[in-house]
Image (spheres, rainbow, N blue to C red):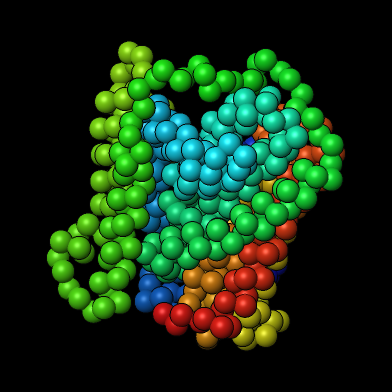
Length: 458
């Protein structure tokens, strides 16, 4: 059986296990990985071992190769995801997220509050998962829309635009984190690149949101179970803005500082230590814990806050590491060499493949994160076979943009946004789904043009 057939069968098994059997994404990825590993011929393993300097890999069992891929994935992302989950949870319980939203709203003013929701969604979407950001901000959107009903849809879509793009472009969210690791793109490059592209794409999303708000008549349908008020937290003591931003800003500063010193050719031991991704995010987690200890409400022990964070983060680690195992066994089949025979040997072709393959997997099974980690398993070895002519960060960004188009009823985010905002399925399709598709396409166009005009050779 050819490598293309083996990998195609593996992808079908992953998507079928999720869609038909309705099983967890982790089980689907591991099942697909085992099947691919079992079907990989010994000759392909010998070739892979010679190429990678792993002469004994052909003697390893299928389960050992899957386990090794899983362990390697854990080594790259597990600590980061766990610490990022702690930061996100602490931002919520301490009121730091609330403070960030309030200050952004105050900066933009009441008339431009939808822009504040856009900025808040993007800022919070970096350390906090998309669904959580939407749950956090939708009560504020509804409270604002009671006095400004004509801006309800614009406000909802602004939150979605900001949080969804951060979710797919800016580490330490799991999708872009694994994609960057698989393509050997440092976080000091991926974070600012994703941030800049994110600002461009959310601007396009905001323009569409304004058009949709003026075109479609979608009222806020009152549901007291979903309606929150800002007044209910008005008297709460919140951390100052500078403190609220520290858990996110400090790691970004340290990681970016390490990138700058590398570019300048400087060797500074303290900077090298602090810019290590695990150390930098760890410092952010410590700052977040201090803030949560000082400002959280109620008598809930801090350890329960951490346990809640690690519980949700643990599931994401399993999915992401399972995706890493799946990607590793795909590489071992020799898929890159076979695909290279069918596509032009250019960096531009790799970008197109990366974007549309991710979009196809996203459309088929719904999850943006699963689409990214499935697609990079095929795209990464293919990119290694080609002289891209530009920095591989563009491939990572193309995959991130590819995870946005065509969300529909098989996407959990579709139902979260639709139900929490009171929209029908058809309304969600022509607003939420259309906007994410536009942002993904705009983002890919920007990536493609930038790869030509500003290649940023590694």
